[in-house]
Amino acid sequence: MALSNLPYDDRAIVDGIKDVTVHAEQISQVAVNFIADDLSDDTTATVTATMTWVISSADAVRLLDAARPTGSLNPAGDARTLTGPAASESDLDEGPQWVDADE
Image (cartoon, rainbow, N blue to C red; front, side):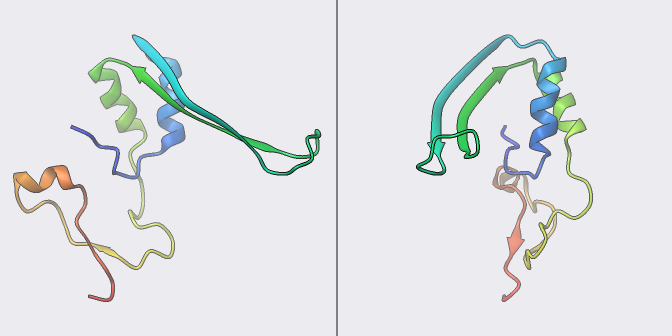
């Protein structure tokens, strides 16, 4: 079951990995993108990577609990509204049910 469509605090999850036993780790899809043609200490680049950790399910639940969203589920400026919890068990894998404000 994946819960990645919920607005958990990504930083809290990644920081929480430091405090749990990691059974395996993988780094892939590393990319370095230079923002400017000038390669000096005054310019920047972005480094992007996919990092995967294998941890116990119990630790994963604790990480998600610590990183659960607080306050409004809607980001600032998002006019959609949450219609409510899943109506049936088959809807549970679809994530939150949203309706556009224009409907």
